[in-house]
Amino acid sequence: MTQHNKTLGEFIINKQSEFKYSSGELSRLINSIRLAGKIVNHEVNKAGLVDILGTAGAENIQGEDQQKLDVYANEVFINTLVNREIVCGIASEEEDDFISIKGGNSKNDNKYVVLMDPLDGSSNIDVNVSVGTIFSIYRRVTPSGTPVTLEDFLQPGNQQVAAGYIVYGTSTMIVYSTGHGVNGFTLNPAIGTYYLSHPNMKFPEKGNIYSVNEGNYIHFPKGVKKYIKYCQEEKDNRPYTSRYIGSLVSDFHRNMIKGGIYIYPSTSKNPNGKLRLLYECNPMAFLAERAGGKASDGFTRILDIKPTELHQRVPFFCGNTEMVEKAEKFMNKTYKKE
Ligand code: AHM
Ligand code: MG
Image (cartoon, rainbow, N blue to C red; front, side, top):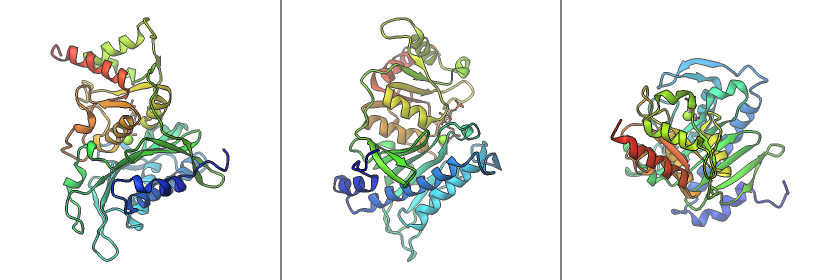
């Protein structure tokens, strides 16, 4: 990487005037996220060396085992945002309820709330496979200076001011958008600086990768089964390639660069799928659309869904526009028969 590449810090300063509400508050918030990301990255990278692997003995609200690194990442992100007094509220996949943050003088004038999945794909930690952090930023809707309420967090994804993810992969990257395109920055671990490595990321026009946990095939809706068969058919540029890491951030990241669709549908066991609307689907849908892609629940645009609860789950179809639209067609055609 050459030294004249723009750093994330320089990029944020240059772009600040493009932000919708340019008080510098959003810039400082993204700065805090990149700092927390570096700390988590450091810990993730030495996961094999220290006794930090394994479960922490607690379960999160969805009844899943929490890995130690989940707990660690959750604490780092929350502490960084709280200590810098940069947001008025946080909701995390690892917390039962949202956190209301008071400012130093007991009054909090900050405008933004952050929703996050501090360490997504955590079942991959023990086997040295990429994991990620997903974040989503909204302006509060209740009056500033008062404690945040549930209403501030249950906003439809189309109200997001910014969203992004950090992928702790073969290299660590932060990819985010404040609404003006999607940009990716790669961490140079030697000096702890992120460099702009992937400016203005876009899904290629055509994709040929489908990512879905086919082990659940028997439980999928008819439309998804038919779409999978379509992907496997020998016709035109098909069969497509199947790639599934089981780590949403990594699967999305690859599909955005190479062209593909990610699907986590409803199943007969889990009618709303597995992924969480607020912490996973909305931020990814925001990025997908900014990168020329599309995200839906099979029928409706993800970003237009009005959330009703913090830990709500939703079926998720996300990737190249053409591929998502094709999958939606299969869903619509078979819907009545199911
Ligand atoms: P998590 O938030 O508990 O880590 O679950 C989300 C992850 C996604 O990253 C991934 O795409 C999906 O769960 C994989 O689920 P499955 O193992 O059922 O295919
Ligand atoms: Mg997750």
